[in-house]
Amino acid sequence: MNTKKHTLVLGGNGKTGSRIAQRLTQLGWPVRIGSRSGSPAFDWEDQRSWMPALEGMEALYISFYPDLAMPGAVNDIRALTDLAVQSGVQHVVLLSGRGEKEAQDCEQIVMQCGIPWTVVRASWFSQNFSESYLLDPVLAGHVALPAGNVGEPFIDTDDIADVAVTALTQPGHTNQLYEVTGPRLLTFAEAIAIIAKATGRPIQFEHIPIEAYTATLREYQLPEDLVSLITYLFTEVLDGRNTYVTGDVERVLGRPARDFADYAQQTAASGAWAVPA
Image (cartoon, rainbow, N blue to C red; front, side):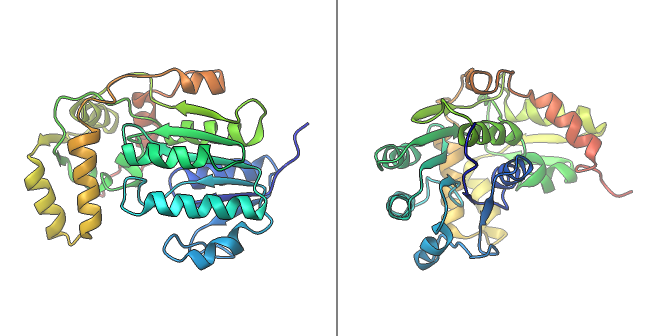
């Protein structure tokens, strides 16, 4: 029987971290939420907060905000893993990015830090359409993105959480890299059509040039580093390099990855896409 490790979940209020923290808590594992509002607080921009958050922790889930492709992420991951080793952490699980060189540089740091590790490599989340920046366009009935006819195996964050929790709580997953995807490729236009069918209302998808999209982001006064990140994700990561599916979700969980249509139907039923009359 496994000893239940005290686990620090970074990004514990985010899309994957909140689900992981909830699952670990339900399993009776002692969990500390790593966030600015946590106790003690954890702030990626203040390294002085890192060691107090790590104190007494035996396992660590790393979700880097906003993305491992951001400048400075490699240095931050190196500094954090050094502190994790010093504080006695026994297992690190890193949420990484598919097709991102910078993310893979961070993976190497974790793999070489000297303690057992697991890497969960993912890309576009299904929940971006319901819990993130694509929610408002979906509600407005018009989604304009610089995403063309490139297939993406959208991954459900519940699957990511289940894989991460399994890696944290079950034997046999240390020093393993899992590249998690949904079960099929969909273009953004096809994903929007599935959401429209699930909601029972028309939602238009429009392909726009990246220049027009970034101009819109700047009009909304999005920070320039985030504009650069989004440009990178749509022009490089969504260039076809990730147009394949893997069986890693089923390999870890013993069940298939959740299909996007199932996500859309459940999300529509929850009222997340309900538009006030």
